[in-house]
Image 1 (cartoon, rainbow, N blue to C red):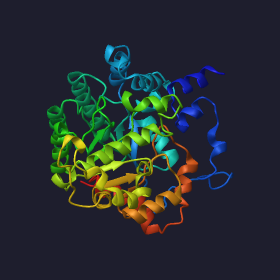
Image 2: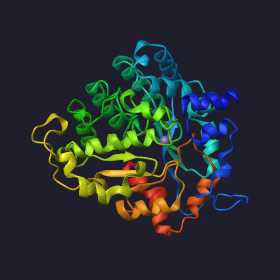
Image 3: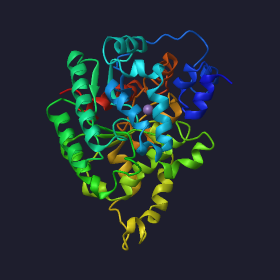
Image 4: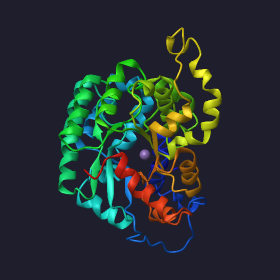
Amino acid sequence: MSTNRRTLLRYGLATVAALQAAGLGVRGQRTVAAPADEPISIVPNPGYQRIACEEAWTTKEIVDAQIRWTESEAAGKQPYMASMTRGFAGNPRFQIPLQEIGEGRILDMDRLGIQKQILMLTAPGVQILDAATGTALAQSANDQMAEAIRNHPDRFAGLTVIAPQDPQAAVRELQRGMTELGLKGAIVNSHINGEYLDERKYWPILEAAAALNAPIYIHPTAPPVQMGKDYVWRGLEGALAGFSHEVWLHTMAIITSGALDEFPDLQIVIGHMGEGMPLLMYRFDYMQVLAERPGTRDNPAGTKLKRKISDYMRENLYITNSGMAWAPAVMFCQQVLGEDHVLYAMDYPYQRDDYEVAALDAAPMSWDIKKKFFQTNAERLFNLNT
Ligand code: MN
């Protein structure tokens, strides 16, 4: 077994890019999404711009702080997070493109036909760090991202990095990002040391996001220790299952907490085809009473929602197809969530394949809907044209 393969298994990094980096050649497995085994050329001007909405980046300071964290006592209590962090932070095949938010990245975007990327701090971000360090690094990252956007306003937009482990500081940084830096929402790399934004202490962040018209993008990270054990033993904690299931929990937690009744303008965005959630909307409504029953959330009365779970999903939830260049899934989600709620994302640099762009260009949907999917939904949700 090669070192690369052992490393992959140890860290459970099941992304296509990780496998390709290790020379495992997953292209041969692309049975569902690949149009054909012929040369692929991306149409440069299909009549819509391709705006990619979940495009990862980071800073060297954040990676250095993450590596220091992996050696700390706190990391010993979050072993799966520590494994993933070492796997990402220590891998130059990720770090070189992740830390490049200038000309080098634009060359890749040109090759892939991407007009604009919405930059999103990659997992685990600053959320594993102590609150003061996380807050300071979030500010510095936002300054650097804002500069990259000023240098290339036609090519980049970005989501505000926040450290939700200090909710008040996170609110202030989100306000600064949205009002002073021209950023377009917030990135939350899912759980906060095993906690979720549905807990009341984090509601000021939800309130501020709703007031600022800042969509909150919840991106996967390694599951917390209490969730991860059964996944890790089977190698399932990463992109194959654990990432998705953990964001599913986070999203459903916010919906069933009643936060969207309190903040009806809040917009939540999740990637990877909505982590599979749209497929189950019917059942969510049928079984909604389970989450409302007395005793849940330590509330003797339970938490009764004003509307059906599917209503919140259609009105407050937006999804991207990141990592899922699969037209049947995209079109199903357009049907059940609404064609205005499904946006394009590539998942750069973890996935960055020309055949994926070509497969979606060739999707059997009308040109009008394709333009919404690739361009105008992102422009409207993230307020890109102001
Ligand atoms: Mn992703």
